[in-house]
Amino acid sequence: MQNNKPKVVELEDVVVKFAGDSGDGMQLTGSQFSDTSAFVGNDLSTFPDYPSEIRAPSGTIAGVSGFQVHIGHKEVQTPGDRADVLVAMNPAALKANMNWLKKGSTVIIDIDNFDNRSYKKADFVEDPLEDGTLEGYNVIKAPITSLTRSAVQEFGLDMRTADRTKNQFVAGLLFWLFNRDISLGEDFLKEKFKGKQVIIDANIKVLREGYHYAETIEAIATTFLVNPAKKKKGKFRNINGNIATAWGLLAAAEKIGKRLYLGSYPITPASEILQEIASRRDLGAISFQAEDEIAGICSAIGASFAGYLGATTTSGPGLSLKSESIGLAVMTELPLVVIDVERGGPSTGLPTKLEQGDLLQALYGRHGECPVVVMAASTPANCFDYAYMACKIAIEHMTPVILLSDGYLANSSELWHIPRMKDLPEIEVPTLEDNNPDFHPYLRRPDKLARYWVVPGQKGLRHQVGGLEKADVTGEVSHDPLNHQIMVEKRDAKVKKVAEFIPEQDLIGDPAGDLLVIGWGGTYGALDSAVEELREEGKSISLAHFHYINPLPRNTRDVFRNFKKRIVCELNLGQFASYLRSKYPEFEYYQYNKDQGLPFTIRELKNKFNELI
Image (cartoon, rainbow, N blue to C red):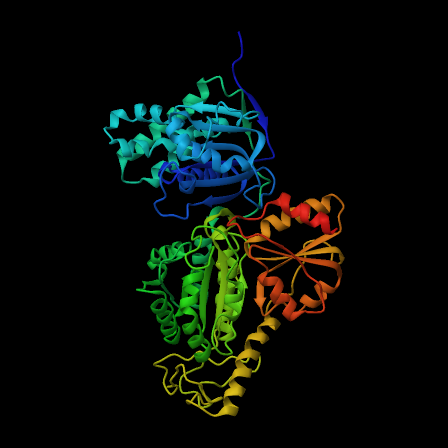
């Protein structure tokens, strides 16, 4: 008897890209596949890619929504340069992603949507299925739409609702292609659509239909298996940067025994943090969806004055609007955490795309001498750690802290090691007992130069705050020129003093060599992967990736001087490079800049580093 079972190929890692119109549910299918991969023990990294237009015309390249996931038996740090498998629900999705395919990869298309009308919308001159565009690829032409409609006919769904289930046909096909237990996909749907039994049943029916279709057609001669990654100790879950940021704020509030207050205005790509905090009233969190950005931050400053952990979230345009109020927090010397999830600019710019364009705004974008601490997260998971540390620094040093995230970190996900509260760093709250005879509003602690956090209602400690200049120690309104200089210098010294309390800059690689790669923020995964691959090839190269930007770690100059060349890599035109030149002008800095709304690829980085080496 002939054995028709497909050959199973074991892979160290694989990159899958889901692409289609916004209504095709590719984000959900990508999340479903990612969660399943995490459940079976794969390491992973994801990259959702949304259209910039809210209602881009269907079938056009501008309307393509994508979700890329990189799963591995080995450690995975990026969503991958190019895809091994592409799901293209229409010709526009195919055209938008052809340049991101590995040669010989598998392309799954919904053949029902590949017609002359759709080709014209996607700006194809010829039929891409016949003109050689897909030569060298394994193309699976599946009638996804028609088979989906047929499968859900028994549920009496309208056409629009029926078509919204076709992403589950894709999911079923992928479950079979990667030898996954389909019951995991069913469990995902039961949780996702809890309480909507007809929707659950219809989606599960389509999921099974896709699985059985893949099982029976002869076009798939090979299936794949990515074994679980090496077992890591502890509890892990799949998390994106926005959720991790929200939980970092919540954890800090719990650590100090105070309630978190988040005053924010919704803005892409930061809105999910507000949504998550709003859902955690069970942890005592208070959220306020303000009428605008200014009201959001001002309410957070008021909450901080009242003794709450005050925070606000935004993106670049909102940070501009909050700048005057950040000055108020600097003047009143209150703890405040400002989360800026960067996006492409200027103006409305590319609201769903990636850019590290707000660094100089975070450093200098306020009137007057107005120093704040500036930090940056570098992976979706460590958004938790740096949100927590931003709270710690804000409270212990009584200063606003701006934490930079970005659209890639916000929406991408990876495995996160769930910490225990008792293992998180302690946070010292600078409080005073009631009726302290030595109290003055601007009396400073000598170790950190920070004033005490005294809240309204404390007996004998009544005081006022506001935007006018304060007299040193007493806190009274002062227009004295010499006092103003004293207070300006003390506020500046307080922020610089933070350098004594943050870690020294670490290095990936040797402490000296031919080339030092310098990065910050969400570029970490690509930079680290490129550097590690070149080190394995015998190149003398190391990576310094910065999380603390103002102030910089106290050993930064020593790190830089031990390398023959230094290159600063960032997704802008050179903001961090300019900042470093102002701080350490004795060194020469090469630059590698990209500003396309896309992350770095490992390949382009390696090519550039090899040029310099």
